[in-house]
Image (cartoon, rainbow, N blue to C red):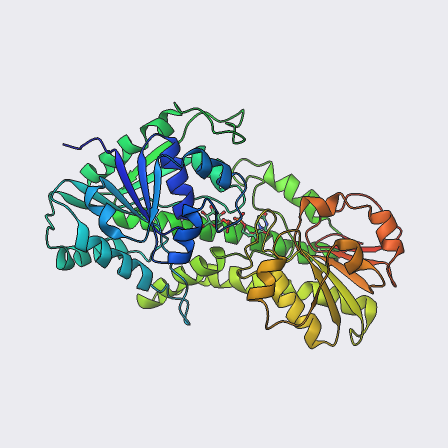
Length: 451
Ligand code: UGA
């Protein structure tokens, strides 16, 4: 029989861990957030949220009575459900590095109690990690009892920037593992499944939303669902980008084409936005992760490899467009608007702007880069790149030979482009995210449509 959970431990305070902690506290549970990084925990204890995620500060502040932040794994002993939300960065050959999962599991093992407890993996982990986790706990937990301690997989499908709405109003909740563990989690998520909670301030329930589907699976299927979902979304984007390249050559318009195909319910219009391709910490890592799982089983994954190749080729398309107009980039001033891998985040991981800035510099250009929120982070994480940080878009564009929109921040759409292009040395704008709607007194190049 499954118990009714009330105390939760969340290990790892990155995007997934913080979101999970905030969500579960909002649903009424007592949550302990654990991280091995004392600086992060000290910040959280002071009410400072170490990442930029809209609405997260407010949600965590509103739940401060229910959440305790600590570096001490002791709280695991009292928890009914323990979530593992640590990073799984890709190793040199694309295989996810499980050192943080292993570390977390060992620390959890030391404190497992004699009560029924479910240890849930929310990190994206190679298929088979659930079993591995079970064995680790068996080997390292003095109190381990397989009828009381169950391992489960509950993958997360949230997007950075809309993490809270994605977790509060998900399409589906995937619960993998032993049926008893799955039942505990189904109870835990009861208020979410029934949508019986009050929406937190600023994160209202979307009009068309009713409630999530609950998908009960084996551990392995749940782990595979996470990878396959990300790989499929990545594939859609690369597909749109591949078609976009041909559109340019035959005089078709990718926006019209994706609208036209997306209306077929079997295809859908989402994640068909052509542009600079995907970035971020997930799509690159997870497509590579699946390929490396295939490799382990001598099973090639040609579709995924092609999606990756198309994605990274896309970063060069922008440079080719510049070269077509400017011939050479030597000594040219190029403004890059947007550094984060997508809007509403300061996350720079695998951001297309990174490769773009590196390439522009390599070709002899002077790069002026701007981002509404990611510049302080870029100063720390991109110190190996050569560019000048521009305090605002106008400064970046002044006397520039070309401007590239690399991230579709809303504030770039609201700029007075008419005036701004007038301040450029040459009015050339490569809108690599197809976001500009007005006709400008400038050369405007977009992706997959005629200029
Ligand atoms: C992605 C998935 O969307 C989430 O469902 C998943 O939970 C998450 O990875 C994860 O595995 O943790 P995220 O990386 O936050 O979320 O970002 P997305 O919003 O999916 O965007 C990924 C990239 O694709 C961005 O660089 C974006 O600019 C690009 N993109 C997206 C396109 O180029 N075209 C599109 O049509 C959509």
